[in-house]
Image 1 (cartoon, rainbow, N blue to C red):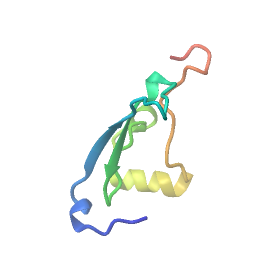
Image 2 (cartoon, rainbow, N blue to C red; image 1 turned 90 degrees about the vertical axis):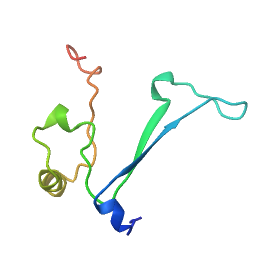
Image 3 (cartoon, one colour; image 1 turned 60 degrees about the horizontal axis):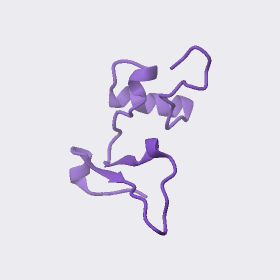
Length: 84
């Protein structure tokens, strides 16, 4: 799905969603209650960028995506011994 709004080519809009338990819907994992959704027509710096790479630019991000095909990477290393 693509948004063709020209404003989103220059400016991104964000919304924070927080899950709240109800009678019909439980929340089992308290560490995953919030999500940030960004609406944009351009590449945005992902949260994981500084964990793996440096000096963000949209050009570098696009080349990273083209060459690796990766759209997301982890920022948590708790599964690996000696890492936190």
